[in-house]
Length: 137
Image (cartoon, rainbow, N blue to C red; front, side):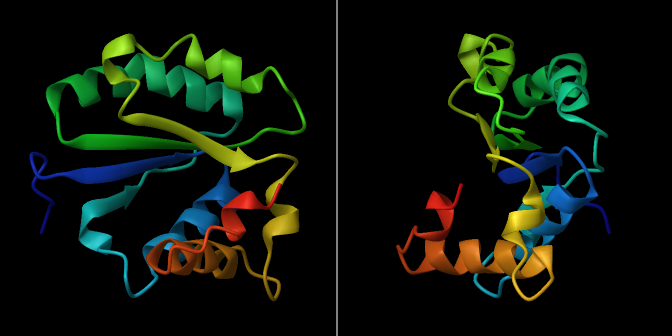
């Protein structure tokens, strides 16, 4: 059964498969409503995430007013990477498009050798108002 496109939902656009696994761990946490979150196929690089935002998701977000988009990238210690995105997010969508990711690469975020475990840890922190995991570089 397909999801109702008009219901509120969070879409996650990951840069690569490692980021997809982080999002999957978050989505699979028992306190997350997995039906209201969709993890999109990995784009294949931060620049491709940026391009998909502009080429595809700006129109999607304008059509579906109850949708939020999370752009999940690796910052690769590049201080200007955020600006590459912020300048392309239209003003009317800035409150529904969020850019998050690891400062270096997701390898540091494995818990017990799994990316999903860190994603679940972050979700648990949200449920418990404990945001220490979000403060990890």
